[in-house]
Structure formats: C-alpha cells, structure tokens
Image 1: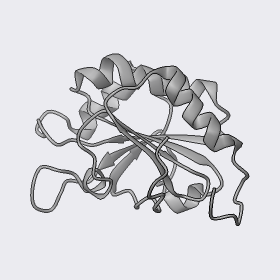
Image 2 (image 1 turned 180 degrees about the horizontal axis):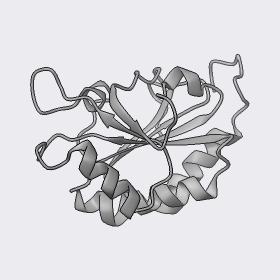
Image 3 (image 1 turned 90 degrees about the vertical axis):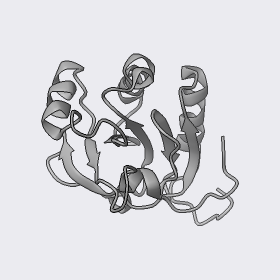
Length: 166
C-alpha cells in the first residue's frame, strides 16, 4: 500500500449528495478509514467491476470504522450524465453508500475533486486513514483480496495515534 507522501486528503468539491441526509466533509470523518470511490455511470470498468467491489466493501466492513463514499466524477459525456440520470442509476444498482456529484471544473472538462486528487480517470479507489492522510491511490481495478488487505491494515492501525509514523 502506498504511504510515501501520506499527505492530507484534499476537500471534496460536491454539487449534490445522494444517500446522505447532509453534506459530507473529509474532516468530519476523522477517526474512520475512508474508501473513496470515483466512478462514472458510463464507465464499463466501473459498472462491471469497481461498483460491485465497492458494494462488497460497504457490506463487509463495519460502517462505524470504515466510511465508503462514492464520487461521481464526470469528465466526458456531460450532457447525459446528469444528477437526474445518476439518481436512477443509484436506485437501479441499489447503491446505499453516500455519493457526491463532483463539481465541474472551472476551465475544462476535469471536475474539481478529480483534479484535487490528481485522478487519471475512472474507476479510482482512494484510501484515507483515520488521520485524514492519503494512503492508497489506485486507478483501474484491483483484486478484492488486495483491497481488503489494504483496508484491514488501515483499520488495524492505532486510532488517532500521535505517532506520526502511522
């Protein structure tokens, strides 16, 4: 698992939230491990592999310890991937974890959260530790066992330790 930089995770830039009664902010999730899943509805790899994987992650881990957050980050086909279409997609795929709609970029097709996290595309899985530090940034799909092991490592770390080496 990546830990070279272990920089703080940037804020999310979200226009609208689904499956959440209020807006979510990264700083409000301190103390939990966060699995941030960036996807697009029209991304074949997202639909066939990564969304089912994230659903398994959400079912397998205790939500008191791991927050699973989706971010719909549209960098192409903007006219068809609207929040209304996303609402139907969420219902049809029975997605229950919170999902934010990434804000469009100010000067181009790359949305703001996607840019802040330097994502290469979708799907992207980002793991953030209990202290809010980026610990994994993976573009594409990865084996369930590898992802589960990476999450387990972060969950096993001492909660909110003052030890900067964690």
